[in-house]
Image 1 (spheres, rainbow, N blue to C red):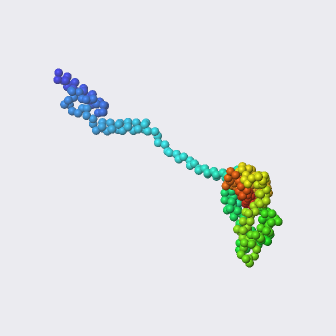
Image 2 (spheres, rainbow, N blue to C red; image 1 turned 180 degrees about the vertical axis):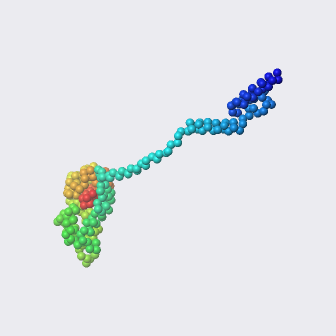
Image 3 (cartoon, rainbow, N blue to C red; image 1 turned 60 degrees about the vertical axis):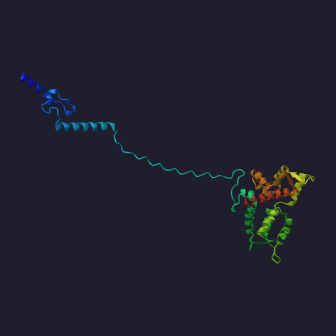
Amino acid sequence: QGLALCALAFVPTLICSSAPPARLCEPRPLWCEGMGNCCAPTAEDAAENQMTQTSTTENNMSKSQPPATTPTTAPAVKAQPKAAPASSGGSSGGGGNASSDGITFDMVVNDLEKAETLAYGTAFASFGAADGKVPIDSVPLRQFLETNSGCPYEELDTVLLSAASNNPEGEPMHITQSQFIDILRQNAIPEAMVLEKFMNLTAGESEVVPCEDCRTALLFLKDDLRAQATSVREDRWEAVMDAAMSSAEPTVSMEAFRNFCFKEARIANVVHLAKV
């Protein structure tokens, strides 16, 4: 019986000795108590177990991580040059191009005095003025007044002598730039023509005319302005008349009518000279 017990005790020992590493070992049976550390893992088992765990971890990581790829640099995109803004030409009724003196159509209708000073100042300088004065018998001066004003040829001497008479006594008969500009303003259109048109509107029976009739008369006035009128585009005449009649009342007197006609003629004269 004693031999049988020893044999039974020996069998579990053999089984435990050939068992897998400690990580798989089950709790020792009761009959192994007191028989030594039959199931305790040895140093070799621990090392093998550590290698197995490391291999398993590396395997799992290699499966979960995608293979590293070398980043590729996107080709640089060339910046496209900005399109040049389209140049805007003179629109209908717009300011148009400026003259060499910086005069525009908008300036003529909105600041007529300034436009006249620029345009006529350049013309006066071309007459060969000495010390800002030009003799009244200057040929270029006379030719300019004949072409660019409403002064009748037979009245030209009278007009020039009248302007020069304002000079200090003893000085030669000449005119200055400001006198030259005044002559052009005061003779933008023949005075007799304006009076005749007003009389036609009233039939000699009234001293005023309705504003609408006055505007109609100004529209037809352009036909009497010769080459100056043709320099103003058709689509600009409304702007010209608006500027000429900017101070109009519901009824227009003969004096107001004269002023409107003269301003319209002055605008046409400068547009013609400055070519705007």
